[in-house]
Image 1 (cartoon, one colour):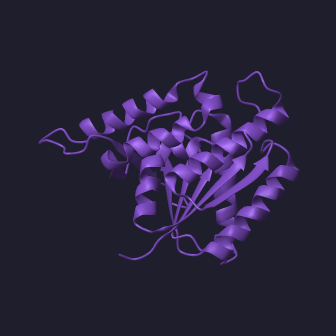
Image 2: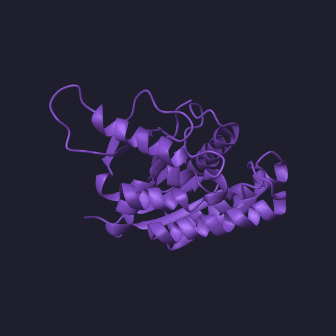
Length: 223
């Protein structure tokens, strides 16, 4: 099996775990090279702590979740948001450097149009802009772009991954984000979605999957 270089971009510290934690756990067991790149520090999430304290809490939670999944390369960019030109410039500089040095063969993002969270869409749109710039400048290695689902389930998908053997480690990684699941127990919600994906994947025959994650491919030069 060829080694793959996998770059996963999360707008917030917990998005990768929610959308594709099971697949990432499989990547690690297959000894693929994985970099988890988290854009914002999540300081504005619901909670009683001040923003600076919440940012530190979420940093520790992201580090714990990465350890659970077996991720060794975790990049916490730590932006407060992606609204300002300065922060967008910082994202552009860091992402171009990682793509140039790492040479990802597959890149994962939240969907720039379908995901209903505005920060998810904003981050992914910026990522696509950066990649188009690198493609235009002939600096982009051959890479496939995949979208994972977080806030909005996909109505179609191009790839389904059986995570039956990794659902528990995914659940543990999500649960590491204690500050978030205290007010919204999305662990149960995403397990339900992953169960649904497995059961309803086919209209005929019997699926052996118990839990699955799905991905939509995004052609780089699409509108």
